[in-house]
Image (tube, rainbow, N blue to C red; front, top):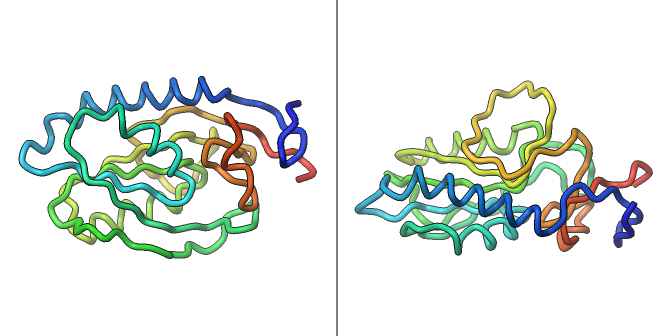
Length: 182
């Protein structure tokens, strides 16, 4: 167990391991997207608040023109289980005709990511590619497509590197499992 400001927690991945995974994702994204939009930049859509760290680490490794925007939706708030999807901020950029790279912190149940993919298509996106820093190893009732995955984690509540637990722990240096009594 490693001491954190949320109590002793199991340390799954170090900051270095997370950064290496993000760099691997960037390589895969570059291979696919470098030549997709010769006349228009890719719209990099950061899912706030959790993906802010991964987007900040990912962007310097991307070798194609992009425009950065964000969307803020959430299902957890101060809870450790997902509730109703709450829309807080919509993108400022037009999605019409855009190739979108949607970046989120985690794929858990898939509700948020699927809703965001559908939103982008309804708004007229030409294509939607998805990247998540971590994907929980679990069965899902929703069949949601993810193009790029950094790391896989057990089906437990994780925090750190942008992921939070009740609003805290986003700044933890790596990925940790929330203490069972948390």
